Image (cartoon, rainbow, N blue to C red; front, side, top):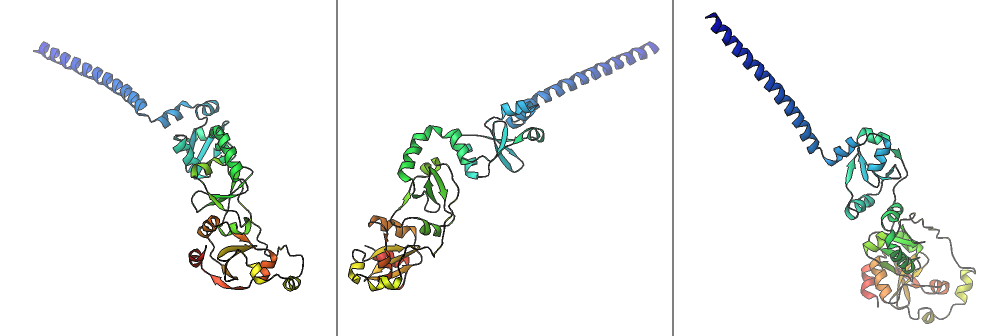
Length: 296
């Protein structure tokens, strides 16, 4: 009886040992398998961050990439993080150049050196150099002119760069009145590198009159001569726009791009000389809608 009991204990002991060994093997296998699964399912961003152990690797693997850290966006160039402040540049890199956003880990971010801002000039140099002939043609065509791609933002093309007008009202103080505002395609506008915003001098005291107004009035030609070929035309003198009707000037306070375009179709906005500005009576104001209805 005792021998049978000992045999039973021996069998139970062996079963426990085998179960324990099986459990250990299974756990090791499961752990290894889980680790492999983790590596397989690691997303590209995490996998890339795990590969980077030093600054040299970071520079090599992140070269010409768009990266983010918290709420900041950078372009990696020459082993430096160049901050992107303009969302249009980010959109161009992602939508046109098909770049993906890579989130930096704390470790990798601390490895990188900060550079200057990544501007449209940088973007143009990096990605649009093949369009240089196109740019030259556009520069020749629109240099020293005002352009827009959406009738909302207006730019002055200067030295092959687009310079933004901060306010539409600034345009009337700057441009030659007889020149049109050109509408161009958004793609054409994007080719121009961005220059400094326009700073417009609004000194109303500036004038080209070198003789007294009294003297000019005393030596004016007949009124019909002053108004010749200006009937129902939009005219300008310095910073102001007028509509001429029945040889009288009506000031246009709400001059807009629609009037400009129609005037361009009819020969352009005429610039008054000093004698015309003094000799043609200014009798009141007129609304832009009335001007559009009467222009011819």
